[in-house]
Amino acid sequence: EIELEGISHSSRRNDRYLTFGEVDEDVRTMSTTKHPASVMSLGFVASKGKAMPLIWFQTGYRLNAADYAKMQEKFLPWVQEKFPYNNVVLQQDGAPAHTAKVTQEFLSPDANPLDYSFWVQVESKACTVRHPNVEALKTAVDEEWNKMTTDYIKRTCSTFRKRIEAIIAANGGYIE
Image 1: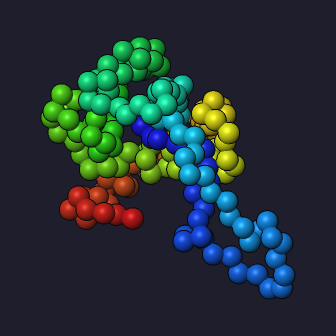
Image 2 (image 1 turned 30 degrees about the horizontal axis):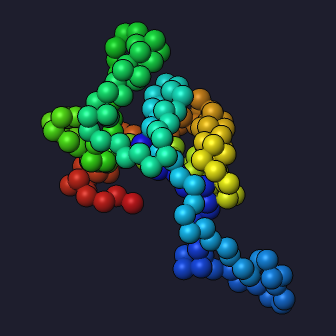
Image 3 (image 1 turned 120 degrees about the horizontal axis):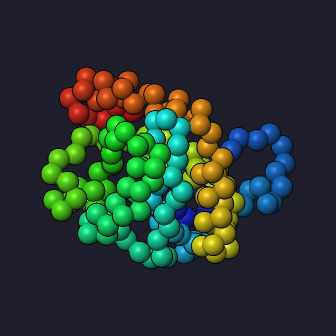
């Protein structure tokens, strides 16, 4: 899952622009929002290029372990329909809801394609403009999520083995 904010992640601290000559005032000024619209979403992708429709949570909600375990009710029917031969491995990141004892006994290092590619891609495109409300943010994120091509999903998931090998070589440490 990811919490998305309806703003671009540019900032005066992180971004610099070098220009020669005069610059329009609107280019020099970077406006910010004190409390931007934000919403949490949960997504699933498969290495065969399939992406489940996003699951949206109410504004302000924080996913906990008990609710995450209940997500199986939404996730498993999709998996059973798309992959009837049960050849599926569920991989998740190190979020507290995922690492709780009620959720799972053991987790591997964070190598989830959702975290290293899909959410980065969706968020960078959907949040390039300020969204006036949560519904506009959801619409933008849904549009970008649905634009992911089967080829892109397959290519990204195909790098998984290489990432795992790098994690092993780094003794489970940081690889990027």
